[in-house]
Length: 124
Image (tube, rainbow, N blue to C red; front, side):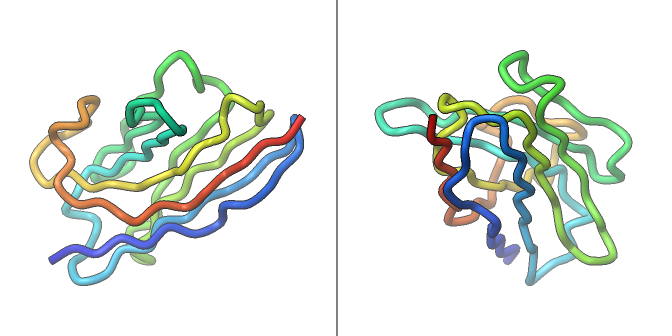
């Protein structure tokens, strides 16, 4: 069973940068495509970044493209989300997730394993 634990959230100011980490255990994360999602109160969970098993391919929605960067270090079993130019609308609970079957998943239905999340709050 793959287990995921996020870390790195916090209280930020507009324009700040932050890097989230997702540590995998139980199985090697190189077998999984990975993604970062966020969920704000009262809103659906939103995919903000995805990365293929090797890290050669990535996906971002328009809402974060150019500001967020997903990366992975397979030997360390860790996936990262670098977030720059943070805005109040980026405030959410951020979760990492793993997909065992899809090369570059862009749909929440493909993700089977989930972390508990880490809170990011951006204050104006």
